[in-house]
Image (cartoon, rainbow, N blue to C red):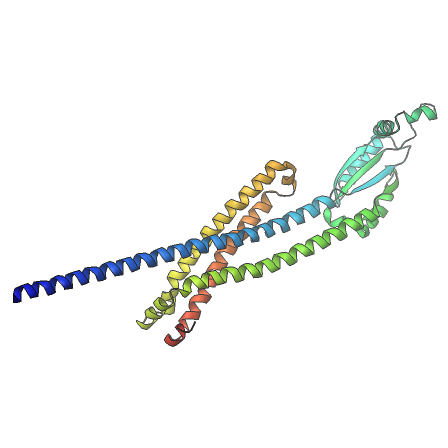
Length: 316
């Protein structure tokens, strides 16, 4: 009877011990699953923020290239004297092309002007002047972007007028003023948008990382109680943040790359302003921001809980 009672008690202890181990194992599995889900959620939310940031960086850089492209395609026309021979005109083109503020030029001969005018009028204009071509040849200049403003063009025009064979210089002053004004407005709006989004991005990523570390605040306090240094406690959180930032940046770059490829398929001419330098700068900005912001936010969050006392951990 005593032996049976002892066996029953021992069996109960074994069952309770087994149930306790199963409960602890289940709890650990639940915690691991919960932490794994938190990491996935953090990576996705960070990647979404980095996508928005990458879009702004891409837009700002593309806007700058578009501004330069527009400015460098504003035409300044040099009308040559009627008596200027084709040889003198070619020599003038070589001189003008060597000037530091000229980005490119296009020589339009008298014959080319006559053909263009004949297409517009529907008849040859030389028929009214005895077969002679009274039109003048011209040179269309494309200036470098830094000189595409009315002050610079006025100064350049005064220098070009002194060259032999140049009769008149024509350019759209109102168009140049309008283009420069609109481009400045667009640049200002893009810069303000980039600054605001950077602040919002930092806030969102910081809150996401703080919530993830909040769930492990008691583990941080336990390690602090057993004598672990702050650097030792921070190290795994910093390594995890770096990995999450890198993964989020890669996901964001994949999405951005797919979007840019779709734009290229839709309009290949966009690659004139979205060049490899813009793409490299955008990718570098997304990768750098993803690593720095996650690491810095993790460092701030861990330090916050390290400074707290045990009683304060229950109040937050």
